[in-house]
Amino acid sequence: MEKNGSLVNAKGLSILWATINNKQQTILIVEDTVDLAEGLAEFLEADGFQTDFAYRGDTALSLMETNNYDLILLDINLPGLNGIEVCKSLTQNQLAPVPVLMITAQTELDDKLSGFEAGAWDYLTKPFSFKELRARVYSLLARNNLNLQQEIQAGGLKLNLKTDEIFCHTRPVKLQRNLHLLLRKLIEQAPAIVSNNDLSRLLWGEQIPQSEPLRAQIYKLRQAIKDLDTGCQIKTTKGRGYSIEATN
Image (cartoon, rainbow, N blue to C red; front, side, top):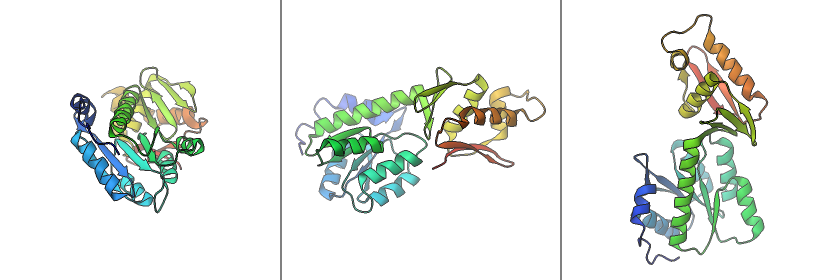
């Protein structure tokens, strides 16, 4: 692993990407070689990132369930669950997309394709230089930040914030403005329940029409996404409100 010159010409970039929207970025390092994991953490922390560790695949999934990470460095050969299984589970169950950079000694094309098919965003083969690692980390964070500015996602459903279109498997469906506002609010607050009052005020302010208009709008939104096989659903919590959640 090349560590020489790890901070050369990096401070300007690290300030930009280690903190986005006034939030320090946190990277989960999933690597069972302790010395390598500690070296990665030392390097990334010197660039201003926060880091967390998992030495097993199943431990990594547990951490992902209780913590929000901005990027995941994921080895393939792990005890518990391997990196491919971890990545598949993350892709299936995570409402918000998280960049995954796979780091592995496996160099065969089929191994790389398996990683991408599981949901990895990029692939770095050992041994690698820390300069290349930095470049890939910054690239993924920049890409994800741009995506978050233009679209938000729940399961396989993506909502374009500029065009009012929803996508699943590249198929676009145009939403009415009210439905766009509802879906955006539900995704941004996921997996929390958004109250009936908050959703009604979002659409009509204080002048809420009679005859349960919110329920009618939620019905229309469900119908709009019903046939898209999105991997998510709008859940009703009686007396409280609505939420969006993954179905698998």
